[in-house]
Length: 94
Image 1 (spheres, rainbow, N blue to C red):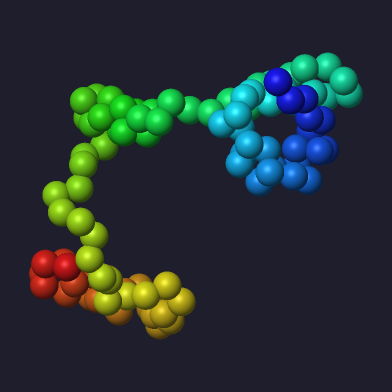
Image 2: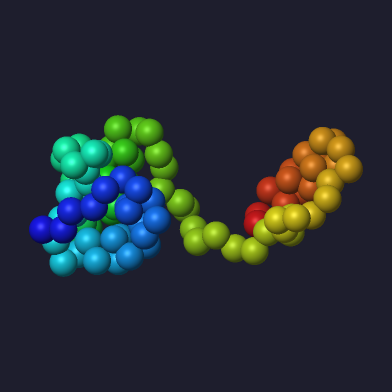
């Protein structure tokens, strides 16, 4: 089991996340253990999403997402134009 200080974890988070499958990492603060970083079970996300759906907190998508006419970075002058664009897109079934 690896041990890492908070500062070390902050500096090399990507490395620790990539290696977490090989074993847990104990995070320390001034030499005292405060947390454990461990891998999730492979189906955790699907199981969690199914549980939230059973509770009525989320709805699964009806279909796969398709292209959107409004792209990130597009400039929309005012709220009315944005609302119209969204409503037009909804009516077209996109």
